[in-house]
Image (tube, rainbow, N blue to C red):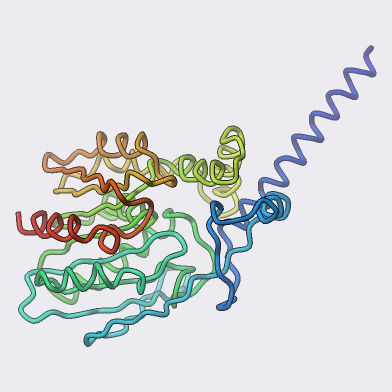
Length: 314
């Protein structure tokens, strides 16, 4: 009987070790990209059953995003340097007689060229625009992404560049990971934006990982918790501390919070938690009924454009 329990214990320990090795491997693949401009990254919901099975066994193969779209108005290419020596590429788009500047920050696997529609609307409203590729994305250096943790430094570098360029008020706009990075950077670096526009920020890193588990029909628990743990360990931070819903408690400036009702990445419960935590006395939640985890400017411009105009002019 003693041998049986001993073997059972060893078997359980071996399975637990194997599970953690597999999960650590998946976490690495999820946050480390490769360079292949011809490869198209598929969303989990776009994959076939065979592709999903292959992903679960061997991890997802993700190529670094490529910046292909460029502004059709005069702009300046900017290169900023992180404390680890990575160069980040940005675009400074000036506007005659500007009343301020909007810093535009993309989401996971995105790039600055993906949000030129938003940039051109901000410019039409009388703002300079600064768009930047996060580390590991677009034309910036690196092949690693921390889903918002180290990207908060990228927000700070963009802020420093813009505030040195002009004394006018600065507005921060971010989508998904970009929104999360803004929420972390503002209290961390004591940034003082006039206003903030957040589009589909996740509530916690664990919630963001859960969305991936749902997409491939895996149980969120315990995989999301294990992926959060190993993803942080591999990059040198505590993954369970990356919580935009906590950062929201330190945002006191006016905030426009946008979410798409069809979003399967960020759920309604997450959105409610983030919005409820916002410390701002001038906050607004806008739900886009026809949109998912995507550009509201492109998908529902008839609602997004006047909404943003009113918010910026208030």
